Image (tube, rainbow, N blue to C red; front, top):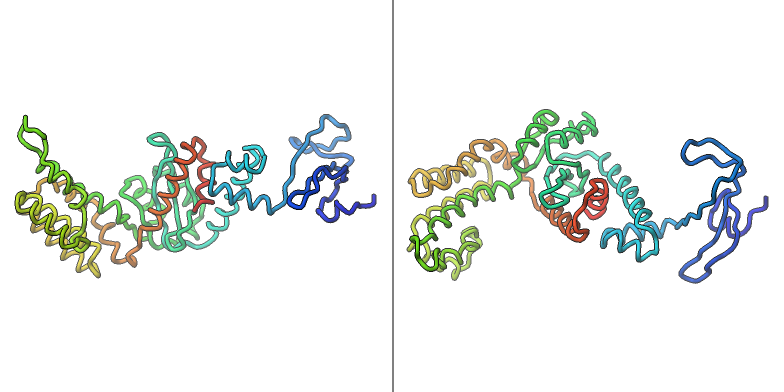
Length: 359
């Protein structure tokens, strides 16, 4: 059969052009039909010469597919489908397929620093484990649940050769993740995410501040307003304060010596990460211990217990090139914005696909 010009120009093999529906500078729509005499069943693959039904299928070129994926990064799938006058299922299937290609390319590359973080796809309902390449800042996968099996299953699927290339693992203080790391990545250095460690340390100062600001029962107001208003300022490191802020804190500390001791203790714990090396971090830890032994800040007992349980993973930060946590925090922020934009997700695969493309 002689090929028509439209079939050749549009590269439509084994098709017959029935006519042009729309011929405009910005859009070309062509109606075609298959020329296959004995097509195969899409379900069982058996060839048949009988016509059971006819279905219209809309095909777009690669440039439209790229545009769809780009729009799906900036808006919901529903909005992208409405913009291009397509069904939600078609657009979502394209996004999932494209994200699969992205994930496959990223996972084939070697990963020296593996970052593990848990996040939710629906508040207090469903959670995923986010795995990212710490050097490249790329999300590798988003595995359902945030337990040992989720992390262990991903590492097992990657294979021993890929796991052997991982030298550093950065994660939060999850005992489930720790168990999986010990089994699958026992050769790698396990480092705790600095953000979570500082949050643990700051909890001691918060407990002291809440105790100090209480007034005797029956007082109005029930708390000291000056102490309460300084709650955010107290979380600032000494090197981040200007003269006016330092003067405000000095006046507060003169009235509340326990608050001064707690603030100094947190400043020394910050020194674990401000130090140039492990020896400097241990010196800051000794200074914190001197303040804690005064007995003025018993609220830091939980902080001490947590540090003793995770001290190897905390102090390993200086021995692994001081891995930053900014990239995974940025990724988590993007994922939370994505979740709010879609009003939450119920499908793990869809959330992973959107997250991979977004990051």
